[in-house]
Length: 70
Image (tube, rainbow, N blue to C red):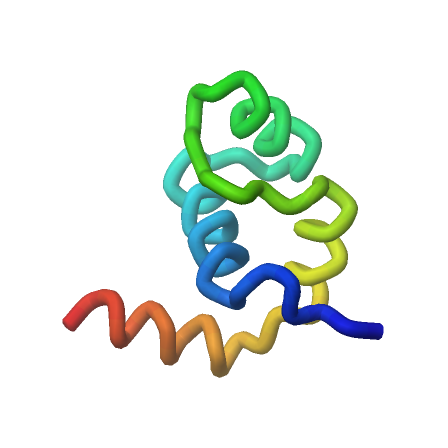
């Protein structure tokens, strides 16, 4: 299966948004994204987000957050 249609940073951003907004449900977060309360261009489907977040490497997330922090 080819998973590179959306870059990893999109999913790190979504994961960060879930943390910052204290949203624990993917459906609720996706509803916020679709309503325009939170805007992300080129939004993946809810299923794609769920699938990719389950397989997102903690090491990659940590590395991306460290780079963004600097």
